[in-house]
Structures are given as structure tokens and as C-alpha cells.
Image (cartoon, rainbow, N blue to C red):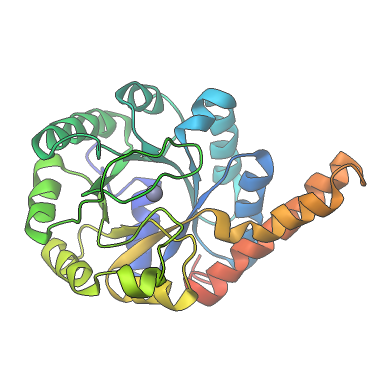
Length: 289
Ligand SMILES: [Zn+2]
């Protein structure tokens, strides 16, 4: 694959966003409605997008569901990639490399530094053969995320120089730094108090444009803080709960009262409105596809 990684869908979406001065949403979804909502929002806004699953989906719905999402994404009229978020277990990475993912986030945060480098590099080497690109986390963010166990470890902030070395030695394409961001909820004072902007900006500087940054820990986060992240090199912004609050409220109000077909159709519509708001008002990815 001589054109790798520039022929990779996730790589193209992220680097186009970087060059265009906007961000792209990595939307974590769990069901068919989530997949369809991201596609609907992206097409309606003419925005690129990333559909993200957790390893949970590889086990609950299985690889065929990821293939369904991939096929729907490829049939869309705008660029949409399929990404695996927080792949913690080496056995899950093995499985993920056989699934229809365009990119995988390898989370080696449970390993010590040298072991993390060795592990992530081994996945990058295998991913290259499949045309898949890799996101990794360096340092460790506090807290767990839906579908993932909460790792009982203290957060470790990313050191800018170590980040540079990590990217060089592993060959990862995108980096999720730990700079006081947490996998929600934020302690008192919120991201405004806990983010170390100085650290983030040094990490951005050390890595340069070739390794776009990924923002984890957006629940909850004000639109303004997302914009602060974008200003300091965040190109891929992971969104999970924040975009589907309206969808949850709709389900709660209507479960058992309307037909399941109507629940799903209307559910996708409401879900997609939550996503569109971010594409238009925060990421500025609307109209870019
Ligand atoms: Zn995360």
C-alpha cells in the first residue's frame, strides 16, 4: 500500500479538517439509530463525520453490524469513516483488525511507557497491512467511558517531548493527549479549571501538523471549551452523551406509547439534530463536504 496512510478514509477526513481550520466529530454510537443519525446529520449538513464504536459492539452486535455501518457510511453522499474507540484488550485489537474499521484507537494506557510503545507499535505494524490508521492515547485520562471498565488508576499527564518520541517510535497517526481532560464528569470547576492549556499547546507544538490531536473527555464540556481545544490543535473531537440527550428524553417520554417503527424513525431525527448542532455551531464542519 504505497499510498498509505493518505488513502485511508479517517486520515483524509482528519487532515482535510486540519488544513481547512475546522474539526470533525467522532460520534460514539451503540445502535442502528446512532449509525443512521450520524449519516443523516452529516448528509444534511454536508459535513464529514466519524462513526465510532466501542469494543462492546464487536461483541454484542458482532462484526456484521460494523460492516453494515461501513456499507451505509460508504453509500453516503459525504465522507464518513468507521472508527473503533478505546480498544483496550490485545485480543480486541486482533478482532478489530479483521472488522470493517477505517481506524482504531489503541488504548495501551494500562501499560507502562516502554511496554505501551511496544504494544502500540505492534498494532500499527499490523494495521498498515489492512490499510487501517491508528489513534493512541499517551498519558492516562481519569475515568471510564460507556461500555468500558473504569480503570482504577490515577491520571498521568502527557509530556510534550515524550509524546513526540511516542509518535516517532510507534508510527501512530493521531494522538489523544492527557492534559487535565477527564472521561467525565469533571470535578468542581469543570474543564475551565482543570485543563492545562499550556501543556496542550506545548504538545501541539512538539507534534506539529502531521499528527493531529484528538479530544477525549467532552462530557460535559461547554462549546467554548471545545473551541479552545480546536484552537490548540484538536482536530477530532469525540462526542458521546452530549449529542444524544434529546434522543434519550424522547425515548423516555414515548417508550411503550408509540409504535416501535415510529420510535426509531423519530428517534433518528431527534438524535441527528443533536449531532447537527455540533457540526454547525461548534466544529464548523458543516458545508465542508
Ligand atoms: Zn475516550
